[in-house]
Length: 212
Length: 212
DNA sequence: AATAAAAAGAGTAGAACTACTTATTTTAAT
DNA sequence: ATTAAAATAAGTAGTTCTACTCTTTTTATT
Image (cartoon, rainbow over all chains, first blue to last red):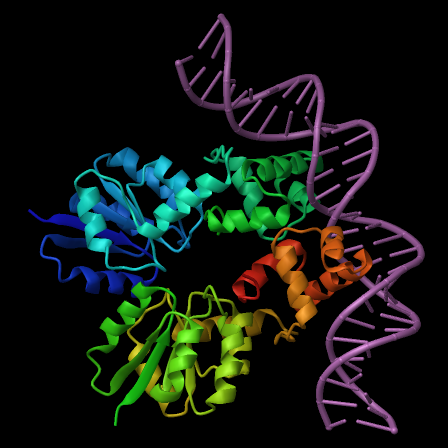
């Protein structure tokens, strides 16, 4: 009985590459190939894959939102995150959110099949690079509270507008709040995402796929 | 006589996807497969490809710097940019810098072979999506000076430090300049990259691969 | 019904950023 | 040798952001 694998990534080339890589594996069957989350969710009930290879950065939805959504509906599915984001913080958050594996697109791809088999059997799989990243981060930041709190809808909305280069007064006018309130949200975002200033906020928001 | 093609991209999956796609094309020969610019430059003299498929965002070098570098040494090589950046401004700058083709990773990949043949014969190839992007941007921004001036070393240095979340006073202290001078550079960067504020500056710097 | 979290708002104060203009010195290019 | 560009510095003025503390109202959750 072969393992059913689906992939979601907005780059056709990456999907093609995966296809080519897994074509030789007799015990792995590629049952789904999606470029966006709607497509995938519509097809999921019938396809029922065992393992999902998930890209984090996609135009419509971010993998961050997708993981809780998918695991809530299909608790038995195993998600392997396949992305180029190499932040220890983000990796930890994703594993916490329910991901069973993490592979870097920039790394060696020979272990994809191995990763699929491992998580298919209920284990966690991290590539060597990822393991190193995590251990290094543990060594360097002793007190690492880590896991970022979820952002509320309002916070996400304001983050998005900040990302679109609006100033606090502009945002206040746009969404009918007082400037002080917007500033408060802004400061809260700096704290929650552990950023020093707006620059750090934007960088993290991009990395975490919180903005479009 | 077949067209010799090389590809540089830091994602093995993308390289694999290209390989798979071009395997069926009898008149196209993949002669090089590089994950970073040093590797490529070392191999170029002997490999002598006709066409280079170039990813813009790579960890060590950015495609922006690479294009002038390559065309200066190998003027006959045709560069096709293959990336997910869909900014009209950036596309225009790259064509101006000497790129002969532009394809979006998020777009339909059926035309890669066609693009290679077209630029191989000295023509310019833009995918449909890219053409639409460019015409739309022409329609919307009437006075679009566009082409970004190159940044000086000092400007790049300060941009990098801004990206690393230093404030102007901190930068001034770090590189022994007056705060006012750093502020002047900062304002100049906003103008040159046509950004409204630091947020826009960071976004463009990332997109254009000006920071690490 | 009680507790917690989210949403909205505000005071004070200072730091940092943006805008526009001008000027000097050094370095590179025709 | 002349011109142009880059690097450096600064004035004035106004706007925006950051920091810390606090309050009220609404919405969920147990």
